[in-house]
Each structure stands twice: as C-alpha cells, then as structure tokens.
Image 1 (cartoon, helix red, strand yellow):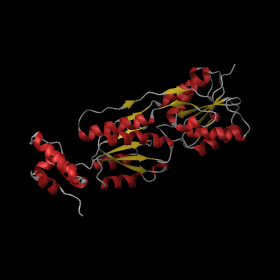
Image 2 (tube, rainbow, N blue to C red):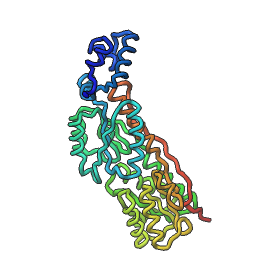
Image 3 (cartoon, rainbow, N blue to C red):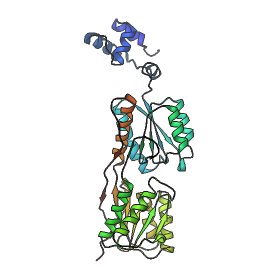
Image 4 (tube, rainbow, N blue to C red):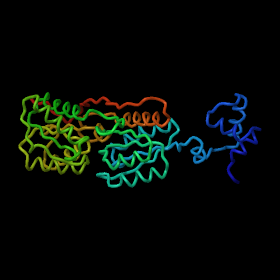
Length: 335
C-alpha cells in the first residue's frame, strides 16, 4: 500500500491541495475550522510531508551540519548533545561530520554538506583556514563557530576565554602552595586553544614572580595518549616540579597514568589540574580537579544562534561563556 499523499489529505478534508500546504506551513488564508479538518485528516491518514517537497516550498531542508575534528572524543560528544537537543526542538535534523585530526577531511565534508543543501553549519574546535572560509562563503549558508573563533572574518562564535581559564587554573595551583609547575599543552601551532592556554599559564607564573621555564612545557594534541607521552617526557627531561596543568582532561588522565607507571601517587607526590570537566574527570580515581567549560550549553547556544540566522528572526552576536574550577582530589595543598 502506497503512503498517503497531500492529495489524499486534501480529498479527506474536502479542501484544495494549496490549502493543505498553507496549513502545514503555518501560512494564512484559512479558518480555524479548516485548519482542524486538515490536521485531523493528516492524523487519520498518517500523512508525513516529504522533506524534499517542503524544501522546494520554503527553500530549506531543515538540516544543519556539524563538523568535528574527532567525533569519538568525550569533548565532541558533550557539544553534540547540546547541538542535537536544540536542533530537534526546532525541527531540524543534524548531519555529523568527522573531519579528522588537522582537518584532513574538512574540505571533503564541506562539499558533501553543500550537495545535501544543508541550511547552516556549526563549525567546531578547528582553526578556520582561508580555504574553509571561501568554501563556506560559496555555500551561502550561515555559520556559527564553537570552541574556536576567527579575527579575520565576521562569524559569530561561542567559546570560553581560554587564556583567562588557563590563567585561573595555574593561579589555583599557585594558591595551593605550588611554584614548580609544569604544563602539558595542546598542539604547538594551534592559535585557538593551544597558544592562548600557554599564554595564560605563563602570565599567571609571571604575575606571581615565578620564572617561566620552557623545559617545563610539553606539547600534545589534547588526546589521552599524547598526555601520557608528554608526562613521560617531563619526568625524564624537565626540572623537578610538584604540579602539572594539563590543557585537556584527556591529556590530564593520560598524564596521571604515566605518573602511576613511575610510582608516583596523585596528589601526594604530584598534583594535576585538567581542563574541560568531561565525564571522565569524575570517573577516574582520584577524581580530577579541572576547569569546567559548559560544552553541552555551548553546543546548544551555538545551534540556537544558527537557527536564528537561518530563520532570520534576530540579530546574532558572539558569546564568551563562563568557566570555573571544579575542585576534586588531584591537587594537594602544600604547607
């Protein structure tokens, strides 16, 4: 049996196809009585409007694309949770694209999203290269950035102040009596979350009269294994230290594992503070002290901004969202 069509709905409600279409798209030109007849016919027949047909009418597919460098990470899944909640509340579907480390597949997925005729894009956690911007500009769809920003182009973003958050994490260690503090940073060349967090770390040390020692900074890629390797490097090569600021929770957990392998106890022998407040920070033992950034809320807010741009319902500006330190059990207060 073939699925019901809009013509079947019109016949059952004893109205024209045009009237059914106007009712389904919340237009004007019909009475409340007619509207109820149409909606009753839709329900009784189980009619599902065709997405392609809807798109031909309102010039939209009710679909947005989301680009992540790593969809498998806890970080990305938290943002995606907020994106999907906001999208589905507004009747939008979400296409998730894994652009891979260093954006190896970003251009490919931008072409895929263009072919899918998506209505807008949430672009996350990656530097907006000129080639990306040109491709996005050619698509002529709105874009909102999450956990990244661009000073070159007028694109709204949602993120925390990475420099200030890193400053506060380092300052927290100092206020707990630590002066020999190492850092496990993200990617060396990353201008979005890499460089600003290193700058915040260095500024906190300088403001407390502590000399910055470059040998106490090791670089990873925000992932677990890179944190583990960075900690091994610090323990083997850096001047002694009593605390570590890791620029992501995953690197912090990797660093904790490496410390345990060397027979060090956390926090008795070494204190560690992370960054993100992922679920893993509460699951590991001892629970990780970390900088909280509201990832799900960031995903939701970015999607709400994007849909406002798609529907042209309001002006949209960028947002710096709040962060704070979550105290758990990985930082020891020194005498």
